[in-house]
Length: 504
Ligand code: HEM
Image (tube, rainbow, N blue to C red; front, side, top):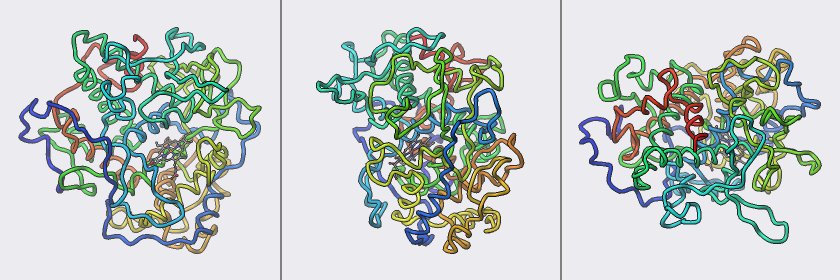
């Protein structure tokens, strides 16, 4: 482990448990400082963005038939857990898409810590309107119906403005109301906090919050990260998992993400690697088994029901989470009661992300273009330079294709250099990490997770941020584990967290 304060060694247990950081923001920075910025013309990036946005699926594949873009490795809930985690770690409302930015001078409006500042805001003293009168539990919103397994599903608390204005969510980070799924995931976390308060009736707010954070961090490392980067990469970063020991005996191995005192948010992560999730978004979702239809993610046609957020949505849209995560009850592979898979991590985004609604992106509506241009403005190195620097084999140009990792499309996918000759030997990092993931593609059933560059960046940044946070379970109590009663077959993942939340 280079340069990262090895907090797990020589730690006096409990010494760090006092107080919490007054900071509500952090810093951006660079992981690969010595690599040159990859320069592209805006035209080349716009052309690539256009090539990465898929055709509109009209009509969409019925849920009774296999869909080639579905990922056998990852269920759809992880897309929105991924988005939720992003909103906990990073928020850059100030950099410019029009001119170059210096990441060292940019403020991350979220702490680069897994501390759920997106949920807690600045806490019950400073933002009492998020909390119940007891100053411990969260307020919740109106009841939602549609989920036959949970009569207590609740919306986020919302304001009630006059004059037909949209009812905005009253939460720690407005982006967690960006779509109906991440919004209900946020309300599930509110309920999980309340459940922890119920299980520890005499505990003060700070203790409940600490327990919630520890459980969340456990899910982030051992469920989310394992699912996204795969067992081998995770075990190479966290060798204790393979050796079946603990982080004290076998500490994490961070080779590329290092920092001196406080962790920073690397732009290679926030502007490229961790945006892999945009390719996992499906065009259409079944929210529950009682609604006759599925809903499209976004539509610019006001007549079409869709999952855009920042507003009150129909009350019968309560999410049935076993259509999004595996609760171990062996649902069928197809049909309305199946677990919906995420779309594959590949160099293709579903069509609605090419034309985001104005409430999400007022200018530059293509998410692909935003990501690519943001990468340019942030001076990101090329994917090939990063791969070389990390000691991974560089993908040759002829294997860098643009389009879906699906039987129906793979043969027709254009080479990247066909989109623009500017990309010869030099691909934008965000694109490269997506194309790298799809290199394993053989047929529609191939599970697709992040490849070596993407997996190692995401894995190291997650583990590094957790080690660098004095308040995380890895720093404070590395041998901590969720209580046995909360686990299923010895495991505590997102499904188990939701199971507990539903009891509140
Ligand atoms: C429907 C789903 C989603 C939508 C509509 C969406 C939309 C957006 C938009 C509009 C931005 C700002 C882009 C820019 O101006 O540079 C953004 C940023 C970002 N997104 Fe997403 N996103 C979604 C899901 C996800 C997922 C699933 C992940 C990861 C697993 C993710 C990771 C990120 C990251 C890391 C940023 C940069 C945040 C920052 O530093 O400010 N997003 N997203």
